[in-house]
Image (cartoon, rainbow, N blue to C red; front, side, top):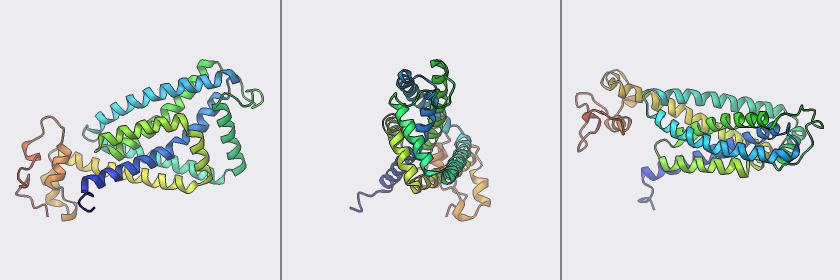
Length: 273
């Protein structure tokens, strides 16, 4: 059994667990926002607007994923992505604190209204005290909500699984499925059991900090400052030849020294522990 649990497999399982939790937590965020955006439409147009918005969200997430994978390979952008994900964490924390002070019955009523609207039912806009919108205006609002949530989700999933492409693809497909099929149910689950959302927040925070750590060290390696950094850093913080090779992996024009042969250090004059 121990032979099966290789470091690579453990890394993949860890990334998969993080991606699953991120998808679960972020899927519920979209339900109320989309439901309220569609509430300004007549009942017969609501389902159509939400389905078109969902189709647009699928395209946006695929496009964002392709762009994000390329961008995270650019020096310093992994670091920038980590700081952007910290902002997502702050937004999640603020929403959780607002929910904690929000009346439970009101929150439940909001979710039930969103679920009803999602299925093309619910009160008319006038009964909700809303001014009717054109189909195009409501669809634009739905797509903006979907785009915001897509950016958060893609960035978090890419950060959690950027070393494992197949897990990232699985996570994005799962996020689309959850958003389309179970967003309101997940929102109810998170509203009832807020501790799940807090666990998700901790995981997203960990991913953000890990991206910042990896991004900073990638900048050091790919600006050819590894030797200077290792000379001044404590031994536990030094960049090993293996880590240096990882940061150069897939980069055109990577120096030969970034791929140590037969276990020899890439910078033999610098002790790496």
